Length: 435
Image (cartoon, rainbow, N blue to C red; front, side):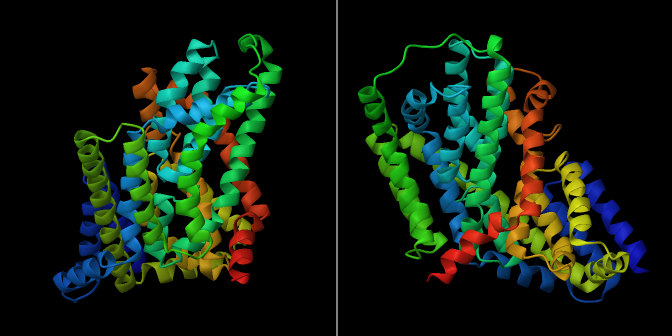
């Protein structure tokens, strides 16, 4: 069987497995088995066992369940209430006022959560009722939440960056550092759009509320201290070279438990729910990573990635043309798959041609996550849309329409990242050169 025919057969098999509702991890494994059986005579069982063990027996991967557990603990704490109370007094003077609490709240919580869905749910649970009660237009309130919630994928400690690092054997600490400035850039873009919208739509904004004295604003800011200390403890220790991502994740779990205990939300039930939630999510991701690693090995036996990279080379696409094609590919794929599945499903095939084009794999990881962020707000499989639909009861396509301007801002952010790659590379290069 020729390489082209084999690639078509395996592609159709993957589409059929996903269309039938098979778990992504099982779909990846099944297609890998099919590829090895058709193209080679190597023992499938031996390759599967050694690949699964080699991928899952990873110290760096230990950070994954720990960061997920930390996010689960904080999701059940009073953190969102403290953030809203600490941020709201300072936002009243900006165009858009409390709408910016959605954006900054998601930005801050993303720095301790690592999950887009958890960020959206936590901030939305507190902010949406408050904004509705004060008379803010639900379209822009929901749009800012849906768009800003995607920052949970990019701002470290990002679960999907850990997955990308584990799948491609890139430095997770370096990826974390590279995600900081792009995350800040997106938050600034979101806030700038919200301010312009508020200026152009003054009739849709509620009446101004009485100004809050400086002393009261400073007192309210004190409620942000615990979350700031947690960010410094977790992310600061990685950036300063004091701890590996795994060690910092363990510190984060301890600090999250302490904050939950201090706030009075730590109980036997909340502890058990957080632990079980983290276990379920971690096992799901681990099986997907194992299946993806097995598929990567199988693709090596079939020589499909090598032939595909050679074919791309014959086309002589410029790096910009290649990235444009990949952006469209990932946007379409994001309409049907979640972000983690997209990353583990495509990296084994995409990364060789990206590296052949001279693109930095660390930069490409940030680019990939930024594009995958768009999938969080694209129907029919946009996780943020599902979360907001559950909170508001609105139709998922209606929520997607509200989030459309922020989808456009994500596209703009991607363009800026491509034109100015230093946005992702400057900080890790600077910090590593200073050590």
